[in-house]
Structures are given as C-alpha cells and as structure tokens.
Image 1 (cartoon, rainbow, N blue to C red):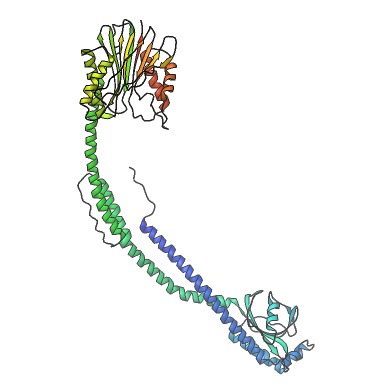
Image 2 (spheres, rainbow, N blue to C red; image 1 turned 180 degrees about the horizontal axis):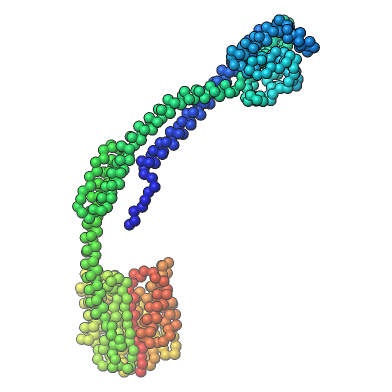
Length: 535
C-alpha cells in the first residue's frame, strides 16, 4: 500500500491555530478597548469644550456684544479696550489648551455673525463677518440658544481640518436676555492621537500576556497531545508490521486523560487483533481442509451418477441424456438409469430434502437402495418404492426425506410403468405435438412412514415421443428480485426447443434458466433426465 503524504502535522496546525486565535483575541480586545475609550474621551472632550464655552459666556458682558453687533466702525471697536481684553482672553485660552476655535457669535435663522474669534492656530474671522452653519449646526444652535440650554456636542467636518467637535453656551445681557453664543471647538485628531496612545499603552502588555499564554498552551499541548499522538502513530505502524508475532505492545503514555485511555485501547486492540488473526488462520486452515474433503465428496458423488453418453451405444431404439448441477459443493439431487434386462430400462430422478453433505450421503444411500432393489426384486415401480421406503425410514435418524419418480420402460412395446413418491410432474411430448405436464398421482415421500403404499400408472410412448423429468430446482429457479421461473415458463421453454434430442433439450433448458436468473445465486440443485423413443 502506498504511503499517503500529509501536508501539515498536528503540531504545525496547533501553532497556526494558536496564532490565529491570538490575532483574533488582539483584534477583539483592541476593538473593545478602542470603542470604550473613544466614548469616554468624547465625553471628556464634551465636558472640556462645554466648560470653556461656559467660561467665555460668563466672562463676556452681553451688553458689549449688542454694542459690537452690526457695527459699521469695526476699526474703532478693534481698539476698544474691552474688545481687546476679550480677544486676548480667547487667544490665551486657545493657545494654552489646544482648542481649534474659540469664538463668540450671534445666531440667525440661516447663518451666524462673528463678534470675537481667537487667532492662534487658524485664521480668525473678522468682526461682524457672517458664515453659514456646518451640517447639523442650525439644529444644534436651536438647542443651546436658550435660557436653559441642553448640554451636548456637535461633531462635524471642517474643510482643511477634518472632524471637529463643537460646544456652545449662551451669553446674556444685563437684563438676562439672550444675545449670543460662546463656542469652543476641538479637532477629532486629538481624540485619535489619545486613542492611539492608549491602545499602544494597553496592547503591549496584553500582547505580551497573549504570546506567553500561547507559548505555554502550545508547550502543554505538545506534552499532553502531540507527543502522545506521535507515539501512538509509531506504535500502530510497529503493531501493523508485527501482528503475526506474539509481541506485546506497551505504550508509555501517562497523560491521565482520554489520550492515555486511547493508549490502553491500543494495547488491548493489539492483543485482540493477534488473537483474531490466529483464529482466522485456524479457521482458514480448517476451511481449506473441509474444502478439500468436499471436493473429494463431490468427485465421489459425481462418480456415482452415470455420465457416459450415449449410455448404451449398441441400443438404437431410444436416446437418453441426464445432468445434475449442485447448488453447493455437493448436492441432494440424483438421477439414474440402468437396464434390468434386455427389454426393461429403469429411469430414476430424485431429490433429497436439505442441502450439503447430509443430503449427499442420503442421496448416495437411496440411489444404491433403489438400484439394488430394482435389480433384485421386481419390475414394478410401486413395489420397488415400497421396499426402499421401508429401508430408508428404518435408518432415517436425521429425519431426511426423498422425493422419487421411478419409471420402467418396456423397450419392445414402449410401455412406461411409473410411480411417483412426492416428486414433480413429468412432462410428455407426443410426436408432432407439444410438451405438456402429465399430472400423475403422487404418493408419500420416502422416509416419512415405513408402511406407505404407492400406486403406479402406465404411459404408452410411440416413436418420436419424449419424456422429460426434473427436480424442483428447475421451476423454482429464482432471479435477483426473488421471482421464480415457474412451470409455465419451463414448459414454454421446452416448446421453443430447436430439437427434441435429449441432450439438446437439457442443455437448452440450462440456458433458459441462466437467461431467467441473470446471474442470481441459486440455493437448490437442478437435475434433469430426458428420454426419446426412436423406434
């Protein structure tokens, strides 16, 4: 057997699996940590920017905002001490905190008007300059430009900067009227930088722990699984090569788990397989011996059946042919024919119940009894069967029985005297007509009751007539589906014969059986005997 090559070992697969597991764990942990930290950072930035917006709103006097709004003399206000003070305040806070924008504006329906805008990181908007809202800005302004604003944060995109987060807080005048909003913006880049730093700070120790855990687990798996499996593989090969030798297999595996249990099973299996091989060798030897003895028995059985054809070369008044095919090595069917004198020919066909050696032994004994009784006593088939039945019944300890059809032909007249002990109906062919079943009277089978009586009948055969007798293996031939050939099929096959020559009839009937069964295994012997009157 060609050795199959395997691409990867369990050890290598285990390493790859642990690496994939580690990568999945790192990605999962990183994702969870990043998601949680980002939410916390955004909340912190909301608190920070909201705090700066509130500080500016509380620092700025709303009355001045109304003064600077819609101003036509911007330059004068740029030099106004209070304007300059607030501008310095916003610039200083922005510079020291890293805010992207720090500003004050008056909101309108579709845009806003800047009053102050810090000028530290990015270019500032001029006093009274108007600008449209970013996406979502209008709605967010409506939530915060009120006496009791709802805290929140607006995240949007700013051209040239990217994502920013904005917080607003309302500014009131001395009459506590809403006049403007203070805004504080920060870029999301700061959030991403902080997030990256945090992930690196967390993942380095996490990655270290995972790598150590993977190495420890692999070392454990190698000791508890991979090495024991290699040992089992090696021992199984040794076991396969030495099965016929009385060599015990001992596996030094002490994992105290299913692997050790598997090793014990290997040891047990090795012992059981060796015992089984010894039993098979013994049985094979015995089978070969029995097979040889059955071959001898088959040869003996074949030798007891007359197989020389034509059987009487010097006789020109009839043709005779017979054949038997056993379903097993030896069978229980038999046929016989012999001359009682120059004018009387005995024809016998019989079927012993059962199969194999017991049936074959009964068959040989019955054949000898019929032959001896017919030659010694009478030309009456009924008397012969009665005498033979007594002898078979007296010695029938195995409860075997025999069906027999016995006919004695008076050659000079063509009169065939017959007796039937439970056997199949004979088939008669009349010259120029067709084969037909001859439904004769059946007596009891031989071996059942010692005092059984048998009747006999006569058939007048003329030139060209044929008698065909057979055992039940012919009509009961069975195909793969369990369907039997049957009497009608058998008689139809006989009527389709190309010739009424006895040898041709029997050989063609075997062909018809083969066509019907289509290779299906048969469990009954098939035996036939055929006689044709020539003159």
